[in-house]
Image (tube, rainbow, N blue to C red; front, side, top):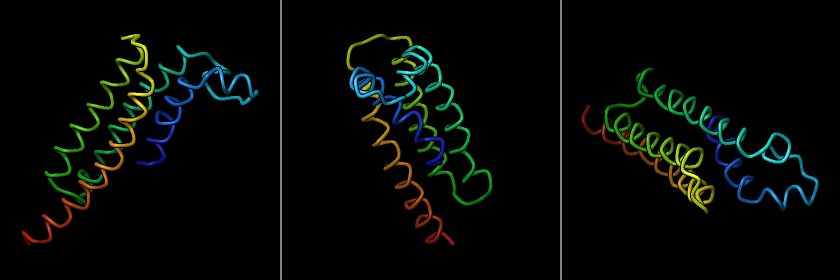
Length: 122
């Protein structure tokens, strides 16, 4: 999950700080391929992340508590990505970046909650 979460998380920050990265000659994706391409890549990775986050449920590692919470969090992250790509609101990159931090924290919290919920039911 972290492997597919990391690119959209950092690319949002890189969009926000694009001029700083360009000025320091650091080849982040928005600098090398442009902001529009980066926003498209973020959306693609968010779709992949959503599918990857279904795996704990699909392989029986978690239950419905995780599934429902995970879907809600991932749809929220995808919504932020959609607004970043198509909404063109100032500051959206940082809002998406902040949401990504909560997304990961709450996602792992759901795994723990679901594990203890299932453990007490059995």
